[in-house]
Length: 79
Image (tube, rainbow, N blue to C red; front, side, top):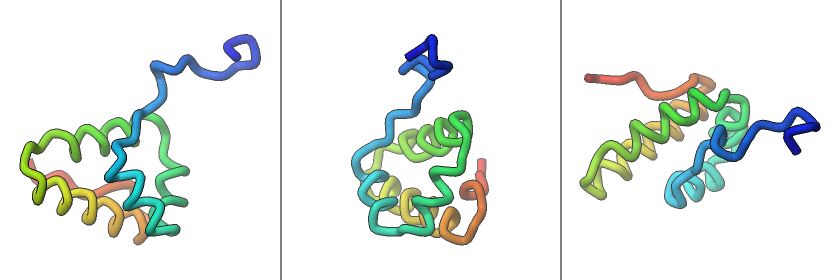
């Protein structure tokens, strides 16, 4: 795979199951997600996974999907 120019597996983002399911339910968001580069995906996943509360995580996933569906690269960080 490396000889064909493919990246090593460590360069890929591991998408959490709840984010994957939310993207699957929102085709526009999934299309925008596919267009993101690896760094943007890792940043978005890190932002979602940085919270411990389940309801906050759900809100962040919903916000990310809505923002991606609107054609933006991700939700605006608040701090």
